Image (cartoon, rainbow, N blue to C red):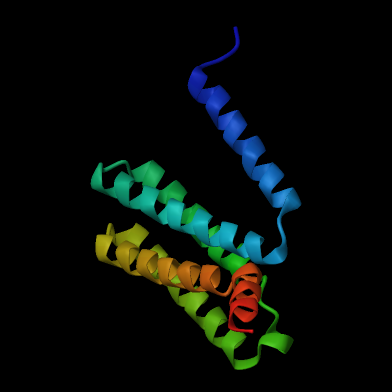
Length: 140
């Protein structure tokens, strides 16, 4: 009558994400995109290991979507200059590697992209406006 508990849990998780997105500042939104891409690549790796080919393809497609239509399009090429150009090229590279991983069931390519995403996410987290303000106040 009310559906499975898994379905209800997914609905609550979806509402939590939607609420987080609607109330988040731009910095947090980018962090959420990185988190989503990392989760999708990690899930693709698990699916690849378990030979769940349709799930692997779905998760890789989701990661590519987040990278190209989330992270890459959020770059301000005018304000970002060379850094934005390099990030755009890196995002293109990651999308290419994910396609390669999908076509060739190549775990090393997935792990490479996951490492890049985690490094970028951690760096982005470190330059959080809240952390920067706290560090400035502490040094004053």
